[in-house]
Length: 390
Image (cartoon, rainbow, N blue to C red; front, side, top):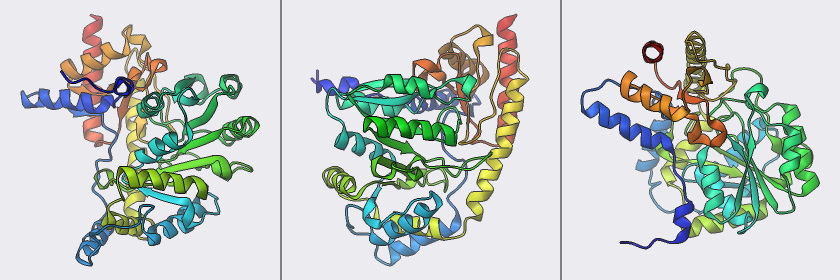
C-alpha cells in the first residue's frame, strides 16, 4: 500500500467530474442523460481563434517561450483587458498560465503560510477551499446568502478577519450561484482589505457573462490595485476550455514570484495557444457575443421552468451560466435530489453541498446546453419529483 504525503488528505476535487463519470456510465448502459453538471460552453471555439492557432503552428510557434508568457500576449492583455477593467496595466504585471487555476494555486503558494487564514465564498468554487487546506492554511468560509442574491454580508466579513488573515477570495460573477457583487459590496470589501492589510484574489473568469448591469473589478477601486490579484482566462468567454489558457494581473513584484513558481511547475504555457489568445482578444468578438446572448435566453428558460416546479424556487442569476435553485421544498437533502434526478430522471446536476456546507438545500444546474435539452430536463425533474411525493 502506498503511503502518501499527509497533505494529499487535504486536497479536494471537483464533483462535476465525478457526476459526469456516473452519468457516462449510465449512458453506456443505454440510459438517456441530459448533462447539466459540467461548467463548459457547448459551443466550439470561434473560427478566427482556431485559424490563428493553426497558422501559429505552421509559423513555428511550437517551442518554449518565456515562463511569464509571450510578450505580445502580455501586452495585449495589459492594453485591452486592462482598459476594460479600468486598470492601468503594464506587461510586466501579467502572468500567463495553462488555464486560470494555476493563478489561484500559485498566488496562495506565494502569499500564504501554514497557519495563516484565507476567507473564501461558500457556496463557491470547491478548488478554493481545496488549495487553502492543501498548503496548511485555515479555510474560513463566508456565507453567500440567497436573501442577498448570493452576496456576502459586509459586516460578517469584517468579523471573520483576524491578524492571521492573509487573503480574501472573491468570485464575480459567481460559480455556482450566478451572483454578481455590486459596487457597494466591492467598496465594503475594499475597506476591510485596506484596513487589515489583506490581499484579495478576484476571480473574474465569468466577467463577460453578465446579463444585467456591468462588471466591475475590485482592483479598479482606490488603494486596491497594489493588493489585488485579478484572475481571468479564455475557457468561458471564448469556449476554449481545452486550450488551457489563463492569466493573472498583479503587482510586478508578485508577478515575478508567480513566474518563479511557474518555472518550477510547468516551464511555460503552450506557445501557439498564446498566439490564438491574442486573436481572441484583438479579433472579431461577434461569436463570443452571440454565445453570451444565447446563454441569457437559456437562463430565462431554465429559471422560469424551475419556478413552475412544486418544491423548487430559483433566483434569476445576473451572470455566468449556472442556476442555483432552492430545493428545500422537496423535503430532501441536496445529495438525495442529485442522486434521484440522475438515476431516475436522467438529469445530471450537482448537489449544492459540492460547493461547500452552505450549499445544503440547493442544486446547481449549468445551462450550457440547448433549450431543447433544458426543456427535456425540466419535464423530467417535475415528473420525477411529483412521483416521489405520491
